[in-house]
Image (cartoon, rainbow, N blue to C red; front, side):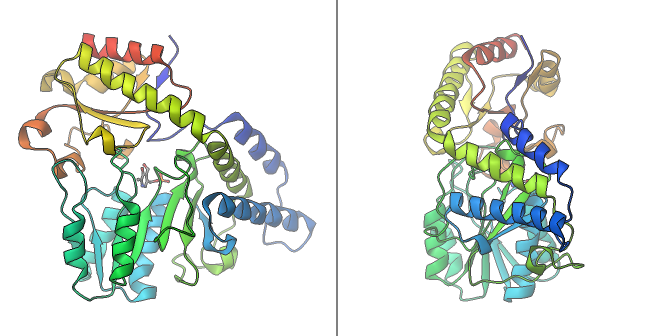
Length: 373
Ligand code: PLP
């Protein structure tokens, strides 16, 4: 059996068509800021990618800005909501990715009010609590992700966004785990800011994007040039941007077929785990989690659990416990800690995240490896 990769929420392989396009662009080495023909062709590649991505996401081209990754995008929006928009309070959730939580907590230390929405027992956000927080009339940024990267729990993006509109708060959504996985029409979504990252949808690492709903304007955090209309200085990477556009195009071209295959595989995985390892339980209501992420608690002793990922790695199986940043740590997940009770939280958990090239045979091999663990 070849190596088995079931960690696609951490990152995805780059599709061959994407590599091909990126390679062609790498050969055209012009600096997009140069006014000669080398520069102009590089610039035009960036602008046609911007139009293509905007069209795929239902945005205007001027609302899409390119950067290096979603961490950068989240940091920029959260920093500039305070500096450029005069926000004095941020409402978020303890289940956010650290790329949101850390900049939010950094503002808290600076005296910005920070409030966290309560989480219900099934891992859903308590929107009644969100509404009660919003009633206090204060310039507010709400920063709540669309799909959680550890559990796959889908937040009610539209419900949250409508509440934000109703109470005149800005809404920032980390949409890293949904862009390229679900149809998205930003023109119709009540979202002011969102971020995405190419390496989560079979594009290259080092390429991200931010959406800023027109006519909102944020000031730059990185200074030093007029790139990205002055909002993000630094020579652009045309090959990364073209790769991101191609990857997004492919994701949407094959969305339906891939969704169906992956959803069936996720269902099969849970059934097999529950059959061969009775006591396996999903974290988060499966009805309310995304089709490509399965997070489960396993009926294994703490002793076995501590070596589990290592044992699977020895069998050429790549999965993780939570976000890639913490999967090597023995600490309990900050996301699961928000809604599991003590007994549930004490059980070892794993996150299995799928792509279209995973097969039932791979799942059988994983389940056998876990049963032997
Ligand atoms: N937000 C979410 C929900 C993620 O899953 C990730 C990646 O794990 C990030 C942000 C950070 O993305 P990037 O690797 O592009 O910085």
